Length: 472
Image (tube, rainbow, N blue to C red; front, side):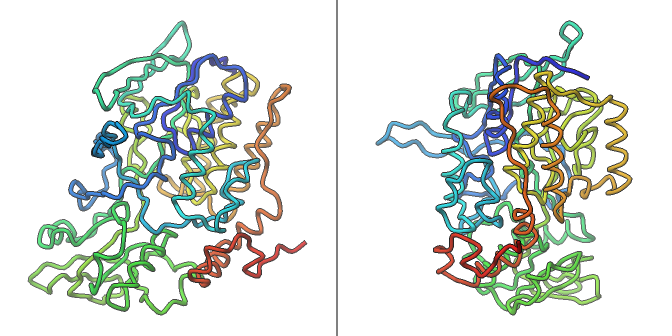
């Protein structure tokens, strides 16, 4: 299956969208590359929004089919003559530091992040991403929301009608493209499970339950009895921050055993999953855990339970992309929409090193859409998805690439890209090497040693300074 795409739309100017644009430009084949970004700047999910209203958060929240998010508006700056800008809530919180060492986190052949602490703060990462995007800024339409994408037939070939709205003016526009790369991320629709009694409990005790997307600082948890649900990297980090001000011990509810580096901490008590939110008649502000234990007088519950995949601007697509929101349906290699592979999705997998993974994906789509690399038959692509479902299930684990699987995935993408017919001057992003793999495997221990340095951690630039050395 070969393509000769000329006009491409990229949805999103975050890390994935910018990496995609760079690989497409490097291919020196495409006539038109347009990037649409609803925020006023690059950086995507790394943009910090200090105002994070959770007023419209449904509890429980298991519906992936939510409408497009409406922005709030920043005040204008009369002194600098700037107009109000749209703000979209991201999961970025005030004291967030990366959970990936900077030399693994950065894009290929770009070491500019390495003058920062080993695990860089979100402000440093955003500055890095803004600088990384400089040479493609001329392609970006900022404050432009894509509200609909429809496939049409144009002389026997796919054509995609991309409908956009200029947010400051509400002016709508339409353009046709041969291909669309969706790089809008998947941290938009928070997931809060439908646990027995949760709906009535939330009505009885409003504003007690929230989601990590809306967490910013720990101050509001001072002297409160707190339950944090989930043991992901962000869940542990948020729990650690809240523990500095809340009543001890903080209760950490989790379905599966926490990673080893999270277990030996004095400030939290590990609990199994919550199985019931109890009515007021049984006890005040109480929940029951899977082991039968009841905890009452709870002041705050923070669900760090992740997000649902959602693409409201592609809701007309058939067969559908989104059913439960736990995975993206009808996709090949977590990348191509099998029925019409001129639609691709960047960065769907999780538990990955995201910047480099998206680079690898972009290198493949650039070569496929330029005609230098062929896709397998649609039958073979459907077989790949069926095999993945058989191995991982049709739920959340479908896109999970943990335990170095993301490294194998990236390197396989690079091997695939190398199969393209040669083209002078077009480089392929670098593959992961043995040292990278060793560091990736040991990130939890490295991160804990980094955190144990306290304020001195801000001066640490290498794993060697923490006593780690990759074996020869």
